[in-house]
Length: 320
Image 1: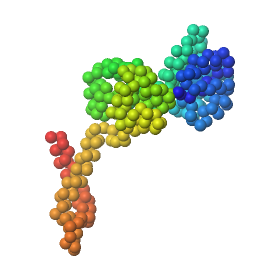
Image 2: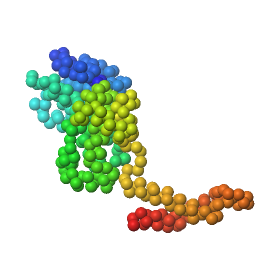
Image 3: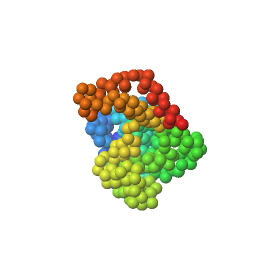
Image 4: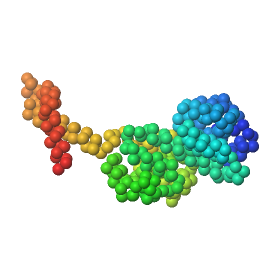
């Protein structure tokens, strides 16, 4: 279960929100902004629902911006009527609000839970983007972000391509050239990240998590998790959820395949230099015993033109 706080001074509205979420999440109701700040001090809160008009709309917006700066990964939902000033939706978006619940007599519990779940998914997306910025190409990041937020809809490759304003074949080609992945890889990674969050944060069973993400069974989710990360769902939950899955799915390495090939080429160049220097490096001068003449190696590596020439040959060989 996610740990949620509700800032709602109206007792009836607070009861409505908390009754919709209890049993699905752990909920604490706060009566004012100081109480909310105290509740979120230790960073253990996953998300909050805040009355966007308390004590007034301008003050609430300013305090929401401060909350976002203090807790950049917190899922925030605003409970606010936008019928009078619909442009405030834009201002709330700029403030970093992940979702809006509009007060309505017909507001159902399912809509409240859906808004909170979407906000939690958006917060997870922000966390993943921050962790992988600079390690994945922008297109890969955009695809992964979209796939995380829509993972519970069981999207297909065609859905992802349409969201990226592309065709499946074109999107696949771009992703393969940039990061060596396919759209199916992206969708699978996103589902596993959502699963990790659900297992650890929300305390769902493997079966319930699998069902929510479109897997046929808990065993199917467990197989996918183990194949992709080397961990079982119980391992993921015990290790904290998203962090170990992120580390397993995206180990730190050079982002682009071309970078990896160049790194490999440079190591091959050094190896060739050592081989070139082998006749003079097979024995230590003055001893007649096998060993390494480090001075000869240092001298060989220090010949910059030779390094460039060997590296050029290696790269040309790889191209051929």
